Image 1 (cartoon, rainbow, N blue to C red):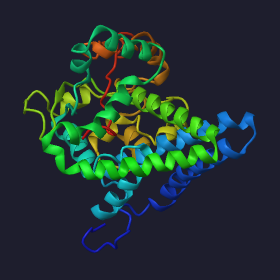
Image 2 (image 1 turned 90 degrees about the vertical axis):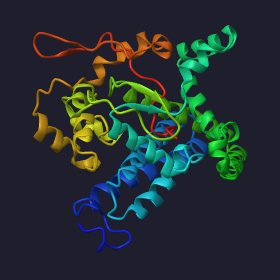
Image 3 (image 1 turned 180 degrees about the vertical axis):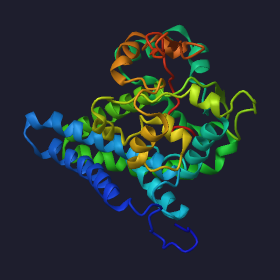
Image 4 (image 1 turned 90 degrees about the horizontal axis):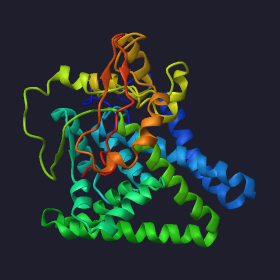
Length: 343
């Protein structure tokens, strides 16, 4: 479809209307319905509401990713407006959508994890009690590093002169969100508590997915991209990218993450919309692609290395077995590479 002739809200792909209506409807319905259930439903319905809100947040995060790639609408402006709306749901609205998109594009172009804040250096240079507090929180499954990264996005305009012009934006957003959550707590303290729990569930799900999709080099850069390196070619990209599918035997479960786990296919064709990724994956790699690591094979490593990975200098080892399969038992995974905090 020509973006020059397309209407303001025309879809980029002619087959995208129904799947996007269904997915966006599920996202909005789960998010809003879950809040209502937590606030108005009986006590036994509270955990159901939490899960519904968490899934709505997860889908909104992955839709933000879709809009960043201009994969939904034909015109960039429409993708940007919807992407900005997703930032308000996911809590990443303290940054500009354009900045989030730019940093994520560097991830694709540079074939590297381009990060804004080196939390490992931050933790290593803190006092032992502060560092121990973060490690203890992560041991107890509190996503302390992810919360630190989100806090850094809020603090960045006040500690770095290059982002000074964003101070007013951050203060306005902060005021609106504090007022909104205060209103939610006034209406229903249980709904406010449930929302906090659902948000942490979202952070856990996103960080689990992000942790095992690459064994890239990481570069701390606020502006620009990683230094060029000829070794980071397309072969390197595919070799260091993994499709950590929710389930290989039940592919529909990957819809819970908007098919984001088909990550090799996404990196091969970044503008392919989410609903086409399973077919693209099958077309490109067939049914026995070495780079596929089902999440059930990663849960153990995610639990075992939940503290080790925080300060590790690398992402651990993915070992190629004789039969062409990959052994991910030593795969620590990445931390702090979320596209929600890549500003």
